[in-house]
Structure formats: C-alpha cells, structure tokens
Image (cartoon, rainbow, N blue to C red; front, side, top):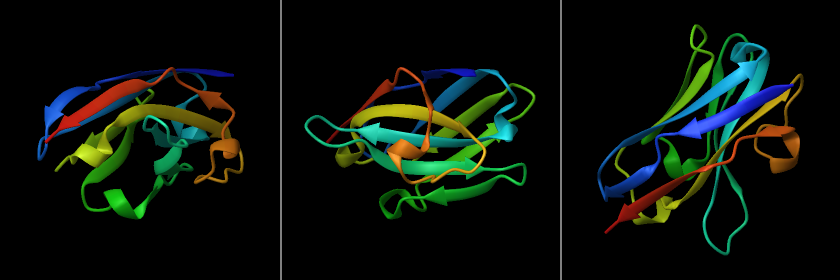
Length: 124
C-alpha cells in the first residue's frame, strides 16, 4: 500500500516552469513504477512520464520530450516532474500514480495507486 500526495501546481504564463512533487508514504518509491498522468477538461486521462525500477529508467510521451523531466529523491521518497517551456495545451490536472511490480507504464489501468491531483494552468 502507498499513499500519494501531489503538490506544486499553479498558474503560469506560457514559456514558464513549474515543478510538481509526489510524496509517497509506505514503500520506497524506487521499489515502484511511478508515473505522471494528466487530464484536461472533457478529455481522457493521458500518460505524461514514468520512472521505473531501481535503475530509474525514464519514459515520456512525445509532446513533452525535451521539456519535462521526471526524477525521484529516494531519501525523501518523492517523485518530481520538472516542467519547462510550458504551453497552454499543458493545462490539466496532473496525477501521480504508483504500481508495484510489472507496470504497463503508459496505461491508466497499469497503476493501482493514485494521488488526488494538482491543477496546472498555463495562460497564453
């Protein structure tokens, strides 16, 4: 069991940056596959980034490659999403997710544990 709490969302102008945090209680984050997803109004929840395994392999959806970076701090049991060069189309509620064991990292159904979400709004 793991409890996830996101923070760091807010309102930012296009081209700006935000860093989202996902604090996990329970098992160490490096024992889980951890993902970030987002959901814009009227749209399905979509994969953004993931960090997997003790090696920390990272994966990104194409639209954020080169702009977003997922990382983790094992000592703080926290996963981060650094978001740079933000665009209005990045506006969404961002969710942190965790799954122990094998993970279909791009799929919503691949994760058991979810945070409550944090709103990111990018103005043009």
